[in-house]
Length: 202
Image: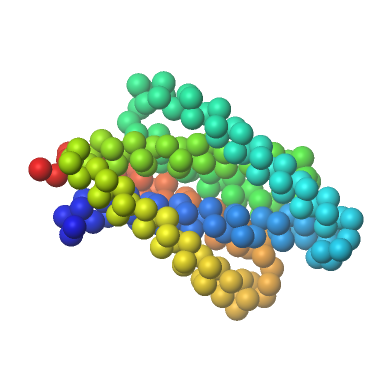
């Protein structure tokens, strides 16, 4: 088990910062978009309802885009390594998250979420492809079981850390959490550029 964790550690670190960024998006996208683009914090207002509807549109947009891009990834991997492709996708996703801090017009959100969709397409496919290529066949199930913790740990961290940061450092200005998420995904991208393909453990 220790050998498996050591084998997966660089990818674990990448996953931690990646999913911390995603949870920042999923938890705070609605309060950020309704407050800073639709100009309201009143959950009973029409503007708030329009804002939440637009959040749903943006989420559906990036998920749909990611689904289409999933068919393109195998073709791209014929010309570039999995590690480099994932690093580039995370870089683009990080930029998309950072843009949420600056965008003040709802239609421009689609630009930001298109970048996030590119990252999401890779996040949902490439890390698992990397695991399948480095894990011995007889230990494949164990590898994926251990790898699942790379999603659980940042989820728990985000639940406690982001709220604390927002309250004590940002004075409730949730838009700054998008900067935290963007920076987190950029860190994941930077680390991924240095992750080398490893042979399976014998």
